[in-house]
Length: 215
Image (cartoon, rainbow, N blue to C red):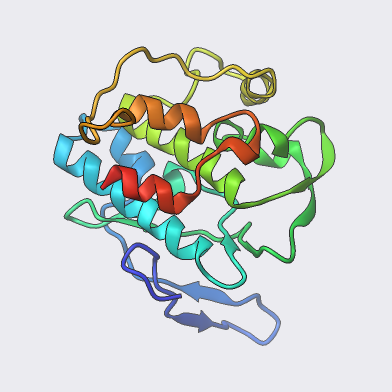
């Protein structure tokens, strides 16, 4: 993979013949978007740069043949450089689209359920299907987190309860747009988020369209 918003893979290192390989990646001294959100508010220019770069990285993954699904998009997996350029990382759940069915215990998703599409949860153990549309949902929640400074539904402590609200069609509350995306009828971030986190996957826009509207 070779893209300005994908953290490059440098190699692997084996300590011993019996030890698992250690992945070698560039050092990102400014940490993750999640770390940044715990500090001072993000300026508008940095905000736009993060949204555009993150969306561009997702478009690159989805445009491979066959498409690559990240599967674990959230602010903790978006690293930043000194100029607030984002880099997608931690492809632990990434899969070529042909390999789409996995079995996963929902308890293993603690802390990430707030960014997981509703069709991917629904029980302690189930088989689910990842897709570009599930990445788009996670992208929407990551954008919301970046915009608001809070993870979705911060008043709810239990992540599984948040996942339950998603399955019932509930979404984070917001009644105004913060960043204008243009002068057209869909020129507001809030309107775009509503499409990206649509309940039915087939109603969510493709990542390429999302990037075009952000630009």
